[in-house]
Length: 210
Image (cartoon, rainbow, N blue to C red):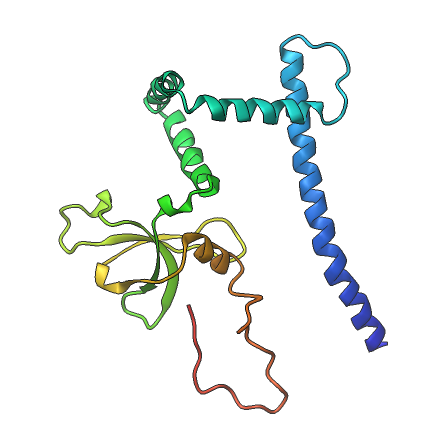
């Protein structure tokens, strides 16, 4: 019975990740297609739109806007609109938060900062993080210089940004993409992943943690 249960669980381990991935991709695609179809109807389209056409038109429009960003006239117009948005209370917070979040997925994560190991003051803990700012405004003129380090959480989007003295930060030979991947997956799946302890085996005399 235990053997049959293990076989069943092995099947679950294969099917569930594939099913969830397919479901998420399908849901996002359906949402994009529905949004594109709604935009077409706003512009007066009364005919039935085949599945996929709305998504194709919406993605095409986004690509066209991307092309337009290479022209200084469009950049000047967008800059004027952006300055107008950031003057509006409430709207500024929403817009800037979404804009900065989208930079994470903009393809050039080097702009986020540099990969570092950060030793948490007062502890023996060393965390893998991203040095995002060498001179954060929050601590200007407040005594000892500090830097801003973003510490990504595992299996979720987000994490705290801590302000620590530069002496607690050590740059490492990793890209920001690698840091985000390692932190997001909690280092699971690597070649040196921790193995289950054999029954009766003694605990390791040392442990490594990041």
